[in-house]
Length: 492
Image (tube, rainbow, N blue to C red; front, side, top):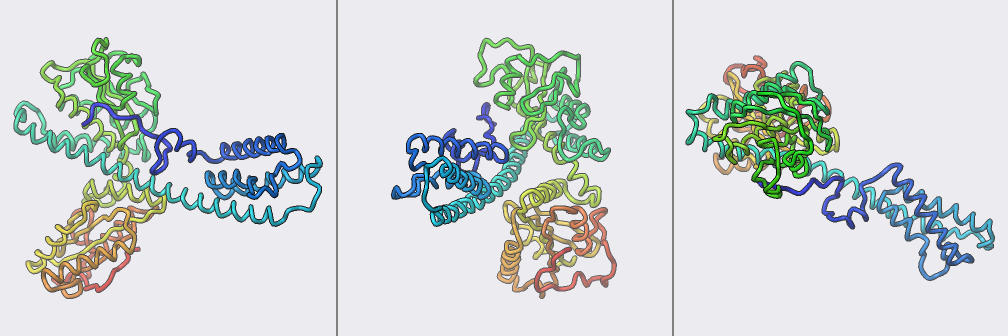
């Protein structure tokens, strides 16, 4: 894990970088855009009147220079701002006519052609603005997945090292620690104390979480402080060991807030002669870049002051932050179907939020198999053939098993292509298809609202009970399994 990272870029478009690119394509709208429209057009027409008082709109000069600025505004902010620039230019004509700058007929073709040009430019700006917004939403989702994968890979490496080095010295295993951290957020969500996101000044289940982390990393004195953006509260929401006050100007605290990485005396970029009261300061990052708190460690045993132990501390805090961030959504799904794995419920909740915010579709595909030896090989082949980005859940009931595949950023066409690929693979490997092998096919487009109920209805159609793993319905005769399906069945 890198010791230092650049500060997060806010409001930056896809493929843009640097101050000049952000100036050309600013991420502002609303009153700021209207103010820029008024000031820019008034200043431009005023300067033109001072330079050419007899022709301030630059008519008949070989190129319609007056429309250059409205086209730029339409490209920057869209059609509405472009139309506003056209109206201001039209008002400028009548104003200049009243002061005697123009005395001829109204130039209808000049304004009609300019209006059409501005509308085309504004439509172009609107289309690409929408595409950029959708691309940013997709990238945010992929960033969350990448951050989670990075933490999971690091935890896997640490767990293997702990098994070899100091498993006997630890009161709990790393797996137990992670389960306890996940349970802290889920139990807090069950009590209804959080509502989707971590509120400023509140970290769900902070005190039991800190006790678990202190036991795993052998921390003797530490405190957790909430953070809202760049504002760090001095009131601790949880502490362990002897109490102490927070010094926001401490070098380790400032270095952690500036770089959003683990800060200790050997951190890169920290002055070697820096005077500090603390042993380490770890950020609590939700997702990949949102700072929601800071853990300040004042005392630790000397033998525990290793780089690996401090890195484990930071990763555990990030794991806890992700659990808090998504605890409400995952609890809503797992309360209706407790058998659903946490990873499946977490990504399902994220994709439902993505559909609600941007309209980008994702899908769930369920392939249902009978429980017999002839279909075991088919089922295992389907399990091995999932895509890298998909989240798979092999479910089982008393009479059949199902392979539920969550396909992020995939619409109905992608689902059809996936089913065709699976059926072609089964036909090539085993000489069978969905209908011949009596494989039930059910699909669900992840909805923006009511996602939990839609998933439960899909499980019922597959005759899989998410509560205890038994069949949800008993209408089919024993051994018959689901009815053969040649195409897709869309779950409502």
